[in-house]
Image 1: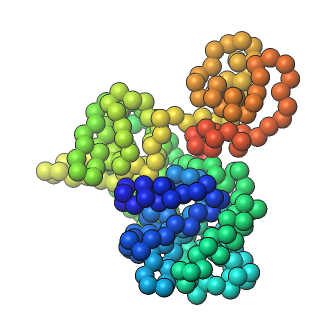
Image 2: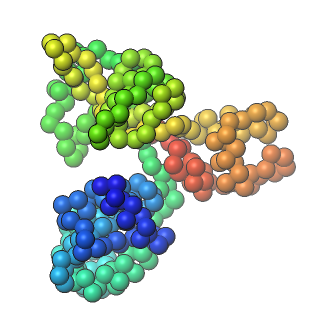
Length: 282
């Protein structure tokens, strides 16, 4: 999958809605690849497998950008889609491979017109914060919330702590936090690193002993909130010290330490778009 992701990103031309396709790619993994491209470029994307004259695409979106709306408009204007379907954030479609440039051009223009800066924020939606590893009986009680699916997602938890031990295996990394909670992740982690982790929880049983264990949904070296930035900005304007990420965001927004600063949007900062929000769920 990492190889396919690299191949996709090597083909990315900066468009607002990249369509990436190859006869070398297998249809069974194009959906996962599309999701990885969206994560990397913060824009809707479609990855396709070409077989003969037909190209089959799997698309993924982000924020409030509606794939079904985009594909419906594409079909209305071009009429070249053989079929399409799905929902706002995940959809599929097929067409004659010769028409890929037509669809690519339309979707790029549609996304350029409709994609909003806030859609590019990589929101972290959490249900509750953790201070330590929860007891196994509390994690087991989460089974009462099943079955999970659309409209009833699996509970997501957030924890900020220092990684004290990291073990790597083939295709997996196991991290133990200072508080004792362990979790698996596919992202690189260094022992001693302070990290913000969003994860799901389950029970691991070994030789009759149970422990709570997590599976990371997302892991970031830092997260900044609007309130954090307001405090940092106030300190900065008074001549006080600020952290590195705040300085980067203020620079990206064109803010000056002295004099008047006009109103601006945090969504204009690439750093804020990547690390800026913890959006509390229900």
